[in-house]
Length: 365
Image (cartoon, rainbow, N blue to C red; front, side, top):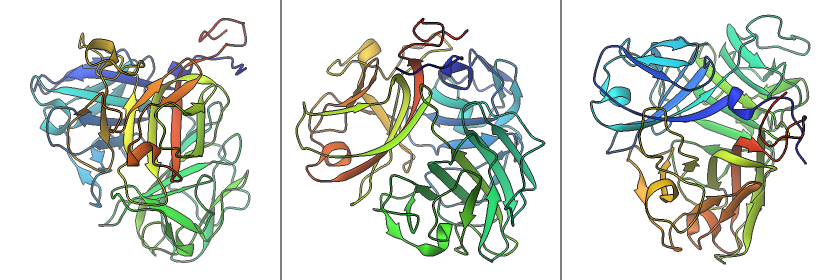
């Protein structure tokens, strides 16, 4: 069983909200002051918006484009004690439109180890308790390393060049090797590129970078998000599709709050599904029970590589997963999630662990 001394929602939380078009729209109920928030409008086309405290609240990047970082004082105005405050930018606060937000808590901005580091971040924020960190750095154009300072080796590393147009680079232990990457703003299968991470998976102390445009060109500006697994809070892995609607169960050791799935050996979208908590009185739009078509069990999802709103379906031929108390069931035969003999990677963050260290499900000491 997954014994932890904290509530997962103290460090990651999913919140739905409704835009009001005002210049100061406070979103509360997150449960902590975020250091990284990912927002998406759910009704119609608009890009995903990712903002973090390391780059600053006015700076945003989009997972569905290869665009450079942009500045907008009306997207996010502040990270607050229990959430964040938005401006009137339509991409995050269009009046009456439904939105979803995913927020992570980092926190430590000084004292990161530097042993083995050849590329020094200009700013960072890390959390050793839950194994997640953000690193802002300037590329050197030479193979190098960044000391991550996390509790163990990261299994997921995501990099975006912020100073110019460049693809999102995703590396992880669930890919063929450290010489492979996925491109987060496209549907492409994994690609062999030694220059992304210098053909090296992260170690317990450092993350390696090569010389590709997506991770380390000379004088280029970059942001990196790194995640190490923590039992009962996060799990990153791979599975092989079966093509059978009833045979694919992924054990995570917790009830998921958020899952992203990507087919790695062929083209497919970056499928995102979440628990659908509500901070603004809206109906949770993504539930944890497969087969339902309304209310808490609606089968809706978005794609990180696309600017469209939610897709709704309960057909087994569409990309569907159902959350359970210990993981998720892939309840479909769709190519994006469960084609026979196809390979898939996933990232999952917890809503509730099986049991906390005090013996009570989902409750910290």
